[in-house]
Structure formats: C-alpha cells, structure tokens
Amino acid sequence: MSDTSESTSELVAEAPLTPSVDQQPDVSDPAKLIRLGTMLQTMLTELKDTETDDAGLMRLDQIRQETIEELGGILSDDLHEELLEFNACCGSDTPSESEMRVAHAQLVGWIQGLLRGMQATATAQAQMAQQQMMMMQAQMQQQRAVGGQPPAQGAQQPRNSGPAVPDSGYL
Image 1 (cartoon, rainbow, N blue to C red):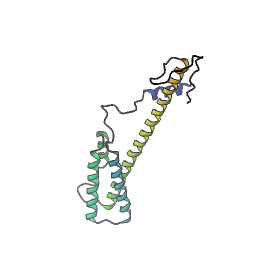
Image 2: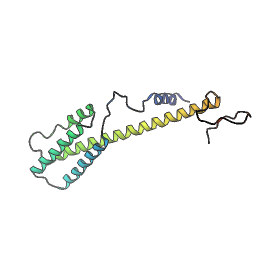
Image 3: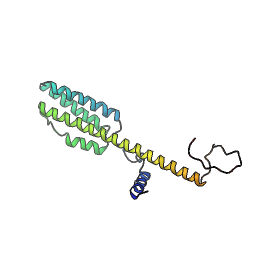
Image 4: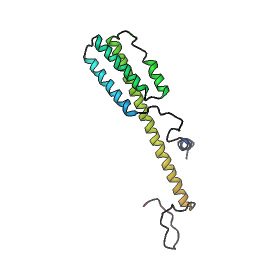
C-alpha cells in the first residue's frame, strides 16, 4: 500500500463518525432551515415580477427580520453571528425595492450555501463510515484466515473433524 493510502486510512480510522457530546450541531432543525429557505426563495421569485409599494416593502423587511430571528433559534452560535454580520442592512427607514431584493437574495444564497455544506458533511461522514467498515471487515477476514480470532457468538462450529478450511468470506 502506498504512503498516501496508508495515511488516508489512518485519518479515516481516527475521524469521529458523530460529533462529540460537547459539540453543538451547526443546525438543530434542518427541516425548519429548508422551510425558511424555500419560503424566501419563493418570495424572491415573486419580487422579480412585481413592483412593491412602501407597505409591501415594509412587510418584506419584517418577514426577512423574522426569518433571521427564527434562524437564530436553530443555528449554532458561530453561524448565527455570521448571519447577523452580513444581514445588517436596511436600517430603520423603509428599504428600497432593490435593497430588499438584494437582502433576500443574500439570505437565500447563505441558506443554500449552508444546506450544501451540510450535504457535503453528511456525504463525507458516510464515506468515512463506509471506509471504516470495509477496513474492519478486511481485518476480521485477515484474522480469520490466520486463525487468530474465534468464531463469533452464536456461530455454528464445524461438525466434521477433517482439515480446517479457511473461511473465504462468502456465504
């Protein structure tokens, strides 16, 4: 095996499959994140095709602010801070239509990026788990072939007294 694949295997074997007990998840309610993102995406699409009066702009700004508050309840502290940092737009005055479009597009893009990051993390964790399982199976097969490991509990013992045949790993 090459040095690269050995070091990769070592990293995979050492990588935790689940977050530690002390570690707060980045998003505590992914379904809510998806619902809020979908709602904002729909609103952004509607904004493209309509002109909005001051009352409509105020309502859109209120929805954006409420969405940010709702997101704050499901995000880790560092993600919540990041969200607040770039969403400090649209002061106390009624935002213009273009400001509102930009603010909503920015929020939708941030949520989409967060969801893609979550998907990438889940995929990487699944790949690591699969690699760990394959390594464990290979080690077990190697131990069986050498005769270093007794059969698992509940496994049937061979009944004949003939020569021992190594387990091929197949049924």
